[in-house]
Length: 413
Image (cartoon, rainbow, N blue to C red):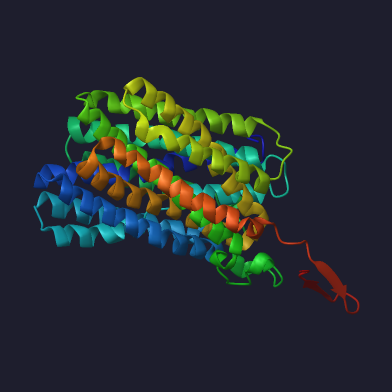
């Protein structure tokens, strides 16, 4: 896969540029908590940035499909750096909550969607290739590694250098990595505005939205459930370790969970699957739901670690297969937008689950927070099973000839 022409040119700068994605929320929490002394205020500002990112990411992806990734990325990273600078200044000046939340909106909305852009480049380079599931697995492992390294780096800078150092590093990496990635124009998918008419497969026409594809809407529900697992696990593991008086073991438990995800991602990429992605998702997602069911019954760190590893092993196949389906469901001119819808769904599900798990843990004990991943994946599984027919790829279409060099692509129902 990595021998694909031009791959290293976007993989390496893409890896650098996606690190800030995992540093933003923890950087905001650590800075705002330091200046206000309130985790509640810090959480509110961080959640505002997260929701703004989830809601605006698809629009950024749509613009990238239409005008090209570089045209959106260059002004985007500059706006993001300015917004982060404003947020840091307000926090250090002890601005009120409303001002911090107001500044958090553009900070979150302008986060560059490097992960979806890299996935769109893989889909463009490997269209129709059996290596596409391998590329999806590679990206899943890269994302998980980012979410292990990014928060650790941000925390070390905020606690060891200065409370604002994490966000300074986040903004710097965004600008440097984003601009380097933007210079790799040769591998970016062709902008939709340059595409010829007739590229409107699967319900999207020229200038149409990936959200018009029924299968994408089903995948959004699926990825909301996956986000619920991430958010519920983060908060519930923290609450559980504090409740038993061992807060230091929280990082170990979450590391085991993340390691399971990474190992399953590597295995999924190494296997040459015979089943279709639709079939694999219908197997993987119920297994993920079943894996989350016993979490709330665990009352020892050893058992919770083992169950967390199992959940991690079940997440990657569902996540990777969902991303792989985009290639068959969405035409090339709307894939970046489709990937950002899925990434945004994970972020939105994570934010909602973190809030719900926190309230349950506060009111009824830490273990009840683990019911959130079960509820989220359960609802998403029912949606997937009820609407599984919408994940079938569109037919190849039929060509109707009406004279010499006059061809019209006709979709076949």
